[in-house]
Length: 218
Image (cartoon, rainbow, N blue to C red; front, side, top):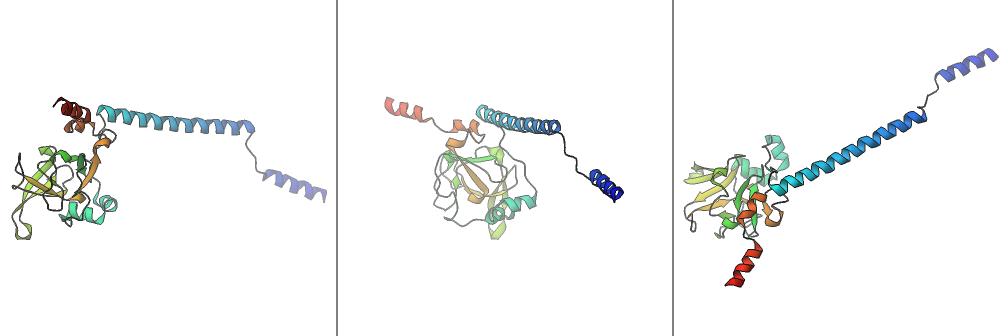
C-alpha cells in the first residue's frame, strides 16, 4: 500500500502544472507595458505628423482606385450605377443640386478635387452645375451617342468615373455648363479644407477679413 501511494504521489508530481516564477511574470508584464506604450507613442507621432502635413499642404488626400468588388461594397447602389454604369440620377432628388455652401467637390472614389463652389451656378436642371472644372487636367471629355443623342460626356481622369455631360449653353465667362451627378461627388466644406488635406485650395475663396475691409473702404 505504501509503495502504491509513493508511486501515485510521484505521478501526480510529474503531471503537476508548473507556474512561472514571480520574476518571470513581472518581466512579461513590464515588456507588455513597454510595447503598449510604444504603440501609443507611435500612434500619436503619426497623427501629429499627418496634421503637420495637412497644415503645410504636404498631405496627399488622394486615394488609389480600389478593385471593382471593393468599390461595390463601399459605394451606394446609385453611386456605383452612376460612376461605373454611366447612369444618371433623378433630377431635384440628389444630394448637391441645391448645395451652395463654399467648398470643393471631389471624386467619390479617389477624393481627387474636381469642381469648386466658386464655379457652381443654378441652371434649374436639378443637378449640380458648374462653369468649369477645378483644373482642366482632372476631367476628360468624349463624344457620347447613347440614347440617340449627340452629347459630350465628362469623366474623371484619375478614377475613369462617369461624372455627367458638358454643354455649350452656360453663362460667361466660359459659356459652358457641366451637368454633374451628385452621386459621383463628395463635398468638402470650406472650413474643413485644411483639416482634410486640401489647404492649397483655400486660395480659391476670398478671406472674410479682406471682404470686410473692402466693404468699409467703399
